[in-house]
Image 1 (cartoon, one colour):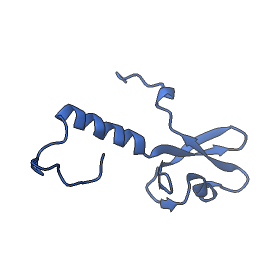
Image 2 (cartoon, one colour):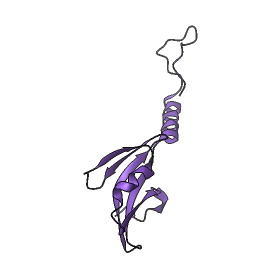
Image 3 (cartoon, rainbow, N blue to C red):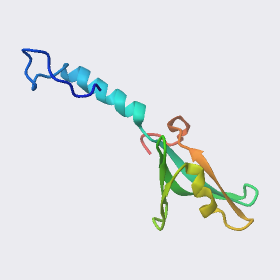
Image 4 (cartoon, rainbow, N blue to C red):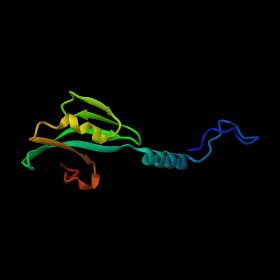
Length: 111
């Protein structure tokens, strides 16, 4: 979206710069271009014996936020991988970042 500029001579400052459809499409494009990436912190028990999602996060261009699934922890991070140390548990539980991929979902819309 363009920065605010003075309207051309004769145009009112309240005159829309485009149609509603063009405006809506522009907004959708801006949101799509700047949307944060969704990630999970996955805890793995031993050598792939078991695992669980321990937290969900949003990664922005220069920082990230994470909330644990039990809501006991909220983190502001420089990068998603900075959360991992807080989710390792001794030698038995290791954590990793898994990026959300909507195409990988296995749940039907009817479920």
